[in-house]
Amino acid sequence: MASQLQKSKIAFIGGGNMAAAIIGGLTAKGMDKQNIFVSEPWDVNRNKMAEIGVRTTVSNAEASRDADLVILAVKPQVAQGVCRELAGAWAGRPAAPLVVSIAAGITLDSLRQWLAPENGGAPPHIVRVMPNTPALVGEGASGLYAGDDVANAEKELAAALLSSVSKATEWVDREELLDAVTGLSGTSCVPYLVSLLSAPSTNTDTH
Image (cartoon, rainbow, N blue to C red; front, top):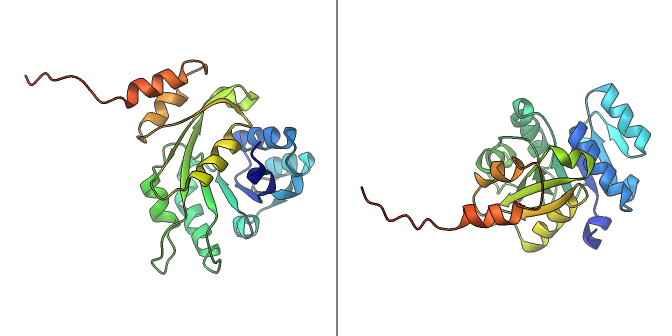
């Protein structure tokens, strides 16, 4: 695990199955449980997280207030409201945390709009990640996509996070390729598929 990730304070907004899988992978690789803070409204999920030994709360603002890295792991239908809440909670921070979204189907443009400060400032840096189902048992493949504003160090942090549940992590240069990566049941063909889909078309048919 990347040393920077080991030192980071991580907030999970949502404590469902994928969040639990990532947390399990992180702690299995030596992540300090007290550096992980999970916000989860449902008692059953929150109690499961507490049993693991990580910090828990029902407050998204509390979980993310001091975080270096925030994982958005909520259902798509509540993502907008949660993002607006987080944007308000971070208004007093000198710099927003890096956001890693595993909310299915929510585009980077939407996330930027929802997470932008109300005073019109720049939104936080955001990485979209789509782990596939085998990631739930540490055997998955994850596609990652980020805008031009995300620094290489931030990309490394996001990739290190996903490596806790993925045998293969691949950056894609077009957001729509995320679905192609996560649609795979295995991992060995991920790099080939990404390179194939990312290549410019050589079709010169003008008919």
